[in-house]
Length: 437
Ligand SMILES: Nc1ncnc2c1ncn2[C@@H]1O[C@H](COP(=O)(O)OP(=O)(O)O)[C@@H](O)[C@H]1O
Ligand SMILES: [Mg+2]
Figure 1: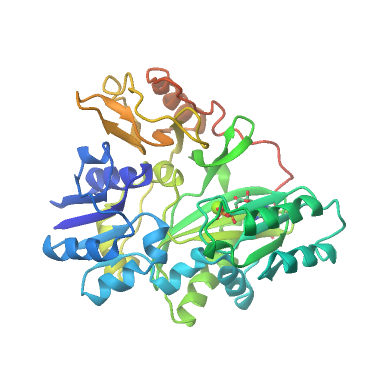
Figure 2: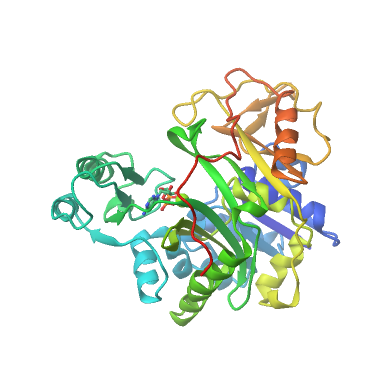
């Protein structure tokens, strides 16, 4: 059997590592376009993730049995519909289902239709309209924090949590007219009530009918320790029993997961693939911040190191809509992924630095090094080739042990300009979270 993974980051490296580690079948792996770390596990094919026609050609001529999609861009562009039109087996949401991530206004209106708890919002189709909504005071007096979001995919740059109304008005202009975000993505803009609480990421596999929940995760978005500085793609993530207790999980399943999946099916786009629900646990209960229609990066790295079930079987069951027939097993551990990034990231960063120490710590016990942005120099050395370079990911009996394993390994790896956070897994004090009703 041949499996093709689409993507090139730490997430895709973790998916391939997990496939290789858990499967009992004899499988051949391909990755488009992949990276230098992934090339140790799969044949990398130089096709960009958004060249859907070329990917489908490849899957056809190479007789790929199953394709799994990592990133959101090809999903939002309809890769699943196109593969299925050609009779190819692919696991991921259709174009229609991918709107849950690709359009925040679609997602918010979907949540309204199905009674799924989320922040109060207003939609505007011009900067003037958005500024007017803010000026009317619907989101509170001038000193109230308020959130401004571009409607479309913006690679994490489309959301501003503004401290005040005037800061929000500035953000409206910045998002809609600043030129930093793709024009189409910022054609519409959302104004949202600012929620307070602890953030949790809940991911699940779904075959369109049945679903299976993964261990809940938390991530660190900002570059600086103490959650300071600009946002990044993610500097670290953890899983741990303390992230979500059983009562709260049950409440989220009943109030969010099930109405989301049944709502999608009822509207004619049964959700098949990995659904990522970003939640805020407020004092009034859990609220959905956003949906992502794929694995998160680096949450995936922290989650998959605990998976014991054959991931290929999970993928095939999703394709055949038989997910209900397999029971997913996770180790009863904690896990942590610490991202090592290039100097300058998330701004303009340096590439081509020689990474020292990587080969020496390749087989440390219970620590995996997932490559996000690496390449090989002409003389075979590992060099940096991206903003986020490596995701060092460990399991442990508790979070402290997982983190200790990560940082012990990190102390042996170095390159010019390397940066990482030393406080992954410690979260600022937050308002008390909701108790179970
Ligand atoms: N309504 C809200 N109240 C408070 N914080 C929010 C709200 N919406 C988003 N955020 C913050 O902004 C971050 C990014 O928003 P999100 O909707 O997840 O967009 P994206 O991940 O596409 O950039 C969230 O992780 C959260 O920290
Ligand atoms: Mg998000």
